[in-house]
Every structure is written in structure tokens, then in C-alpha cells.
Image (cartoon, rainbow, N blue to C red; front, side, top):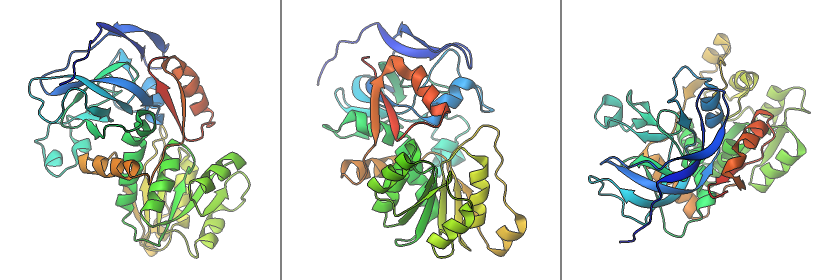
Length: 351
């Protein structure tokens, strides 16, 4: 069994109040509980949820002070006395769902993310914007040795989330799926999972750079909302009556409403993105007459995680990433607020 020298302090980015200063500094290295592993985080993706956590946008209190982040990939360097499914030296990942009770109705039915006692990385549990993070061994992600840890980091949330959303849409191979917000961190992975699942992909986003990325990732039809005057008509024309399913990873309330109008009769609209304070609006008459379904899709369970990682490790999905230092997190948040990010930013914890 490999042995690692674990320091007493580490570099991290944390905040003491919601919306307060993002501090890059030294904090203690946590000690794993009996059911936890300690992961030396090598890389961490940055998710829009992390921005919401910092700002305190959602009606759920964050732990304060808080280390954000929930897409951390690294190496197990210590483990608690009860841990049987990881060994020192294994590759492991920190997910949004850090732990759950495993005994309530929702956990019994494999809806662990809906557990009333769910512990959330980068929200109620210090997350992956640090060099060493703890995770419940039951929920931590298993990663194969030799995997590129920088590229798999976004799979641990963005990948699992869109993969679960596509499963929730319950589409058959050859059917159309529209991805609203197609070329951000979530959308860029949704395109690839959809293609790997045999779906035809229409993407909605804005700008020539995003159009280029969309086609590079295998998308079929791109609708530029900055140029197209009638989004609903354009989507329905391109898909001969509307997509069979829509994955809303956009943070635009208007885009969500439009998706309920252009979706195909008997189609499914899946809500994934979480714009602060947004309301999902749908015309009752049209929704009833077209018999559409509107579903919310949260993060995936352990099986969804294993399957999503398998797609990645078989080379069917890749992460369009840009690697920057951990200390540059405030600049990444600024770009995120401006909607100026292509793909996913990944933090190197050594910088």
C-alpha cells in the first residue's frame, strides 16, 4: 500500500460571507472521519453552482466559512477506519453529493441526491477548491488509474448531470434533442453524451465561436439566438416539428419558456440550469393539447456516475477545458458572470 506524506496546512480558496472576498490562503488539511477518504485534489472544475454558492443565491444556507468546488479529481492519501471500497493510492473524485443517509425513502430508491440529510460538496461540506478534501467513501467517484485527472474533473458534476438529464428525457436513438445553452460547461458535454447515445443534436447558443465549438463536438444544427429572430419557428423547422426532448442548461428564464413552446408534441422538457429566482413558465393550453412533460433533473446517483465516467474513459466524451491556477478562481467567476466561457475552466491546485 502506498504511503503519502500529508501536510498540516494547504492552499485553498474560501469565503467567510456570501458574496464576500474570495480568499486564497492557507487552511488546515482536514482529517477524514471513519467513513471518509482524504483526496489530494489535483484538479477541480468550476461549475455555475459554485458561483451561486458564493453569492448565496439559493434558498439553502451554505456552510460558512466555505471552501467551494465539487468537481475534484485526485489521489486517495488517507482513509477512515470503516472504508472498504478505496485503497491508498487509488484515483477518486469529489462530487456535488458528498454523502447521504443511505436509509431514507429516497436513498432506498437510489435518489440519494434528494436525501433530506444530503451533504453537498462546496455548499454544506468544504469542497474541491483546496489541495486536500474529504468525501464519504460511499459517494466518492471511482476513477481508473492513468486517467487524465484534469479532463475527468468536469465529468464529476457537469458530465453526470447532463447524462442523467438525457436519461430523464427518455429518448430513443435517432430522435432529436435540443440543448439550450449548448456550448457552456454543461452543454458542451451534453452534445457529446447525446451523440454517444445515438441522438440527433440541435444546439441553441450565441456567437460564432460557440457555433464552431458545437460542430466540432458533433452537433448537427446550431441556432444562434443573437441572430435568429424567431427561435421557436427555427427550431421546429430544423427538426421537422420540434425536438422530442429539450435539455435546458441555459440560465435564461426566457429560453426555458421558449423550450416549452418549440418542443415536439408528446415531447419532454428537462430543467437542469438553476438561474437565481427564475420561474419556469408554460402555456397551459399548449402544454395540455400537446401532452408535453416538464421534468426537473438533479445530479445523478452512483450508477449514473459510474456510467458517465465509463463514457469518458472509453473516449466517447471529452472535456473542452482550459486549465488555470487555483488562485485565479475570482477571474473565472467574472468570466462566468459575463457568459464568456467556452467549455469548462479547470483549476490546477498547485498554482
